[in-house]
View (cartoon, rainbow over the protein chains, first blue to last red):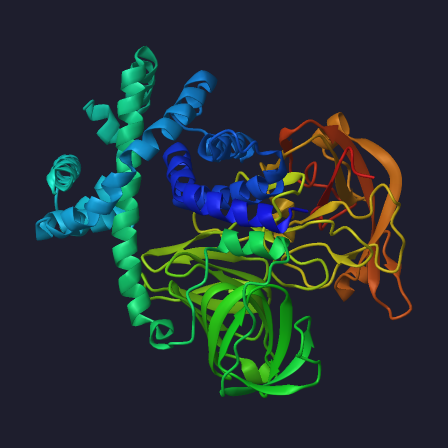
Length: 176
Length: 428
């Protein structure tokens, strides 16, 4: 059983790491329900093994290592993906995720304002893709468009948002 | 950016494109970094879009209008908190519907007492309530909801099971994802705030409707489904169940059994497998779609078998010809198959399992079984059958079982479905 101090420390660290772990698991398994199941399992394993965690090392890579193990022990066919099919690639993907995420964390705060600036059509497509979970074919059917045109639109919107966020962060950095 | 990354993010890569992208990622660390950055940004985008959409959903729900109802933490967090026995809250009661406390592990809530309940928020533990129309509700923490009337419970998040008597027919559980209407039954619902809801039927029938679809779908005993406000019903193949009652529990993360699934696909199918951690005990329910048969009713189980994790199988799959049931094991384990001793054992069982010599009494079955070969009749005239226990030791990973019967047989005109239990090899 963890001490009160350890419980508080766990709470603090996991709260900060959980969004990153969630994003990582979704990227790996490409299925929202499966990713959510894995986040829950990862949280419990991290909690159970928290006494083994070495505070001298960063928490996020350790938590991602636990998440990676959960993917490997998860129902295999569900967890099989482009990333997991090669052990070395999966390992490097996990390490890179731990390195990249903190560097990009500032972007998420600027994203909402950029989303609000999107044209109506682009916002609708983004909503269908990321909230309703529809693929290009599904969005195309819903909007009476060609799937190829939807894919191109999604690609452009992502690029537009990336440029918008970059500009917003640059302006923030220039502000007195 | 490599256009294949966009195709990956759209989940529209072909097999050859997938192979090409893998090769590209392995060729240069900068490629992998670009790929990870695109995925992280995609995750940010998904979060931002969902956050906005869920805010709109929550604003529409009564929870947002109830100033005293706090927004709780995500489900996994609650599970962690409960495991640590950290009490992060207590039940909040306000004037509302009259209920009787049938049982409770909450301090101050004594069995037999009556209270008026409206908002219910339970951080951990459980409470069983009886409404004036006889409906029994089991709330298992963490759970948050509002009892709007004696015929409606609005579940914001968490897990609730209902046992509805004759007067409670049409009792309705509403979630952010849709509604579940009882048709005289026992069922369980679990919901995530603004997200997915899941329903499992333990006996009788319910009607389920996702907010995305206008039509109700009827689910019967042994069936379960998951749904969201924006997508229709999908199969919920594996349901973690309580040992002592037909109720839902959180998925145990430390069970040796990581998952159970079959090869029958998800289309048009809603049957579920009930996984009961440590559930193989005298009197444990055998199947998810039959209310009566129990394992070893009135008998003592051998210690090497008792307390194994139990998979309540779906009895109607007994006649599926190319059926496969895959168990994914987290650790090496003894896998037990409990099968009607009168049936010729299927080849896959003979090849990979060994008979233990133990036979369990299983029943009661429907009265028509009383005249069947090998039936044992108890003092109340109820028929029971003997099931043989077979054992195989399996390594961690997938372990596949086959169909229940070897083919048509004259001696057993009604083949029965087998049961499954699993025990870690290092478990006493």
